Amino acid sequence: MALILTGGLCLLIGLVFLPLPPPFFGMVFIALGLPLLAAGSKRTRRLIQHLRWRYYRHNTKIEYLLARLPGFLRRHGHKTRPDVLVRLNKKR
Image (cartoon, rainbow, N blue to C red):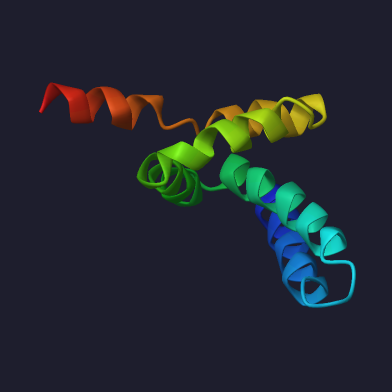
């Protein structure tokens, strides 16, 4: 429950700070909030996984950024990899 609250708070702060002059500050909070939400909620993890599969060409950029995050965020970010959906789509 704490992961969901912390992730939601980080995401909300990121969305508030996004239109301010240095937009990078809001992106940092969004990048911290999404893996925390994915760690606490299976529904959010599946949504992020589906979005990463849908926009697969951007997935390499996400993987690049995940490699530079701290370990606990990287571990939760890797749970949203779309590899399972890619394999299922190839079977069909």
